[in-house]
Image (cartoon, rainbow, N blue to C red; front, side, top):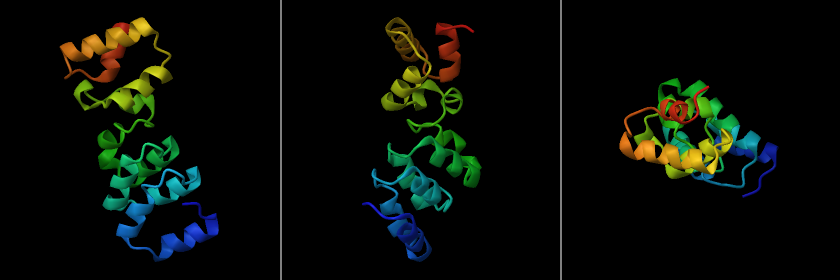
Length: 137
């Protein structure tokens, strides 16, 4: 769905949470539109945003502002910042989120393999701790 910003704002002011949750699943929204939906902070809308892998980091940051108690849940989104993902137990990281984490930190093929082996051995450790074992600062 492609809406102008003014049409989108009008829709935001009129639509129910259920309709906004459906809109939040749209992968064609602009970054600004994702952020505006995140400011609604409704549980249904937040859930749809978290299931939409097109939701950019800026919308996730806006979501945390309005739902700070949900930080660890939001941190699992593939587009969440690396420092948020680092705090998650390895067992909570999806393959897509892990893949984007490893790309963002510039992991080599060997480092990726080491991370995966360590995660298989002990998935209770935080991803950041596992990463520091693989590439100490």
